[in-house]
Amino acid sequence: MTRKRRRLWVLLACGVGLGSATALSLSAFRSNLVFFVAPSDVAASPPPPGRSLRLGGLVEAGSVQKSVMGGQPATRFRVTDGRASVAVSYVGILPDLFREGQGVVTLGTLRPDGSFRASEVLAKHDETYMPKDVADALKRSGLWRPSEGAPPPAASWNTLAVPKQGG
Amino acid sequence: MVRRVDARPTIAPPRTLSRAGRGLHRFANPGRFLRLSGALLPWIAAPGLALTAAGLVWGLFFAPADWQQGDAVRIMYVHVPAAWLASAGYLALAGCSAASLVWRHPLADLAAAEISPVGAGFTAMCLITGSLWGKPMWGAWWVWDARLTSVLVLFFLYLGHIALVRAFDEPERGYRAGAILALVGVVNLPIIKFSVDWWNTLHQPDSITLFGAPTMSLVMLWPLLLSALGYTLVFAALVLARTRAAVMERRIRALLTARARHLEILG
Image 1 (spheres, each protein chain N blue to C red):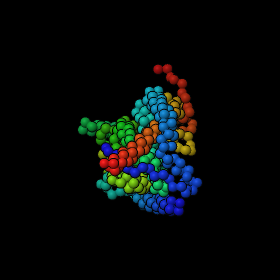
Image 2: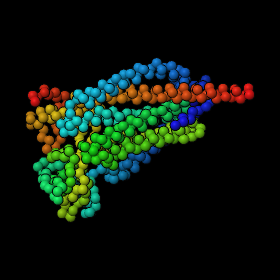
Image 3: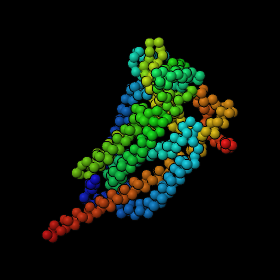
Image 4: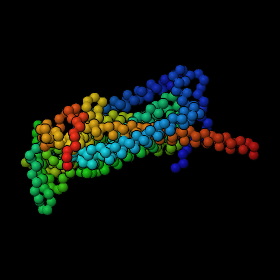
């Protein structure tokens, strides 16, 4: 029995050691593990121009301008995190989820004038899952405008059952 | 693949044991395990298949489409339970590994070796369905963010465990090495769980939390929970059936060895 007890203690000690080693190294590499940086991070510590980075945030309401450049769709929009925003330009096809108020992650470089030229745009989906009629009901009642950000607290709508609309 | 099985018959538990030790060894008796699991198996497998089918049919055909994802949201009913079971299965693997290292529990060795292929299957399903959802929604099949990368590491841990426990001529050494690998890999579980909270990731945070309202409409939540319950029972049934087969295989091997030795003596 003592050998079993000893093995148990050795195992627990190894677990504590390994766990704290992992926690320490994760917190040391914290800033390198992020997938994207926010506009306010860019404003606080601007990266050297020409270095490629991922910029993430919400597409600012009313900022999207579409045009055509050399036969390809071109888009200009601003990415914001509420405290700062960065102008982004992108030439290419946008993902289906792209809209004003949607989270996006763009890969590209910062230009000397502070704007961002993106070579890739990914849409970020949030944790909200809502049937179309619930979303329509919230929009109709003025409780939520998708172009301005996240929906109201889930508890206010996740039990909402909307009667079927004709047609 | 040829499964290497310990040729020696299972060792009976020693007579002098503490109460806790005796309680555990009651289930280490392979005969009792076979009887008990044989009676239990149909009662786990049948409801598991029925609930999974009900949850998936409900989710794939009757639940409403999402307001912006459209019908692509239905992948969630396959993807999310697979992801939960991938992590939960690893926790079970770690539990068996601890029992194997500390108490030298022979059934825990067999169960651990049988959990990892099932867990790897669920993890692969999670990664593939996630990728199929990611292309139309995010615009990318794969990104190296913290959540996706840590689940890929989980998949490799499962594959490593599968290979390691079968890599030795002497099965006991394989079980020991596999158990150590599985326990070291446990640090990955909190990383998977909290990756979406600790770091900026492309993957969305959890919609269902222990505290707080789910940020998912209840008409979508019910089929998801039903399907998750079904997946759990199917996972348990698969592991139980595989472990039963492993116990029987070990017995047959022991009988054949004893017979061969007997004939050798006679000849």
